[in-house]
Image (cartoon, rainbow, N blue to C red; front, side):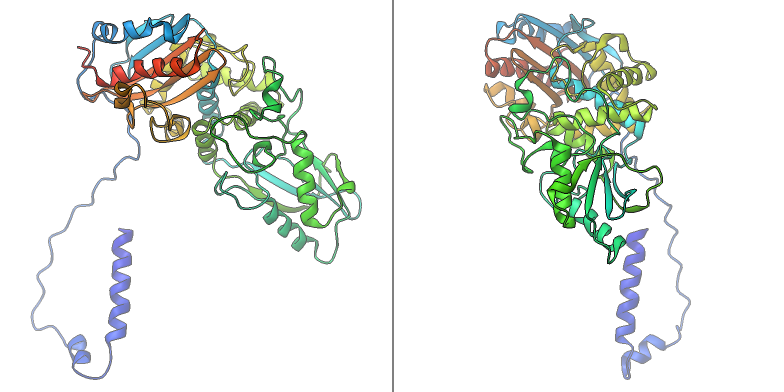
Amino acid sequence: MALSVVIVLVVAAGVVGLVRPGPVDGWLSAEPTTSPTPAPATPEASPTPVLVAATGGGTALTSDGVTRAIDPLVKSAALGTKVHVAVLDVGSDEVLYARNADTMTTPASTTKLLTAAAILDARGPSYRLSTRVVAGSAPGEVVLIGGGDPTLATAKNTLFPGAARLDLLAAQVKKALGTTKPTRLLYDTSLFSGPETARGWDSSDISFGQVSRIQALMVNAGRVKPIHNEFGGDPRSSNPADAAAKAFAKMLGVPAAAVKKGKAPAAGQQLGIVQSPPMVQLTDWMLEQSDNTAAEVLGRQVAIAGGKAGTFDNATDAIIGRMRDLGLPADEANLYDASGLSRNNGISPTLLTQLLAFAASGQKPALSSMFGGLPVAGWSGTMTKRFVKPAPNQVGQGVVRAKTGTLSGVNTMAGVLTTADGRLLVFAIMASGSANAVTGRAALDRVAARMVSCGCL
């Protein structure tokens, strides 16, 4: 309909341009000599759902067929000494394969699936995180208030497209202050509290750039520069909030010596505000690039949405609580962080597959948004270079969408795939004790690739 309106307006504009003295004017203004035959009415088309619930389709698999196909691969020594697997047919809700499926094991970054579902359920896909500046209690004092936006940037960059920016916030503040020049900057990080690192993190996780200290104010997820390295870590600020505040102070002309941590006055006049991209975009980035800092910040938002303080313990409790409220087996999760860096975490394959199946069911439309952020085998995010070797694994490229997880000796993957016969499956494969990360990941890919190609009847 909108396109039709545009076309009508364009035609009308063309008619105006043609009205001029001469034959054309006569043609346009002449009365019709016959009554036009009315065109048959075209019925309004029913809108196509953006995302419909999975309803089966294709040829149903049997548990015996799936077992014959993947059991030898699951038992491969390359996967490791402990392997936990669950495979579920979304259309029939039938468990097609289970091996230690109800036992919690180290999930690594598949933990982020729970975090994504919890924050989308708690806040909704369109929610935005705000970073504000208010007038301080003393003349010439301004206060930068961290809103827990991990994608906040100093200026336009390619790391987080569409991110809220401190340079735009500074312009608002200058305009609001008029001729008054700020002389002192406080930064308020009170939205988050408690420890800034989680139990179970390695001492090198921050120094190697795998994650930053978790604070309510940071730029570029705590990175020193707005870059993301595919392998290895991204250098992080030792104090992300202080670094962000000093970058903002420089934009306002406030010396670094006049930047201090503080608390915003309860009734401080707002001088400026910038907002993050919608929550669905934040979860997309977190899942696709497996950004640990983003996951931890979003985990705290789950707690805050429930009226709790933004701490590690409250975040993990809130995430598990959301799983319980959704009717999922929440007792099969034990979390110490929201990203999966903690080796103390435990999640069962059954919980992961039931979560994915529930998200695909359409019962909670907000949760369906998480599929857009899942990396695609051979195509995007952490799966760009997966399903390459050996050659039989390539059948999974473009077909398997999954969240991967890697810690030393741990390789995990949980996601969705469509079989050659058009059947939608969700799966979780969680292996530990592998002596070689490269061969371990390839062995894990082989299991998913086999499900793509098998008839499994």
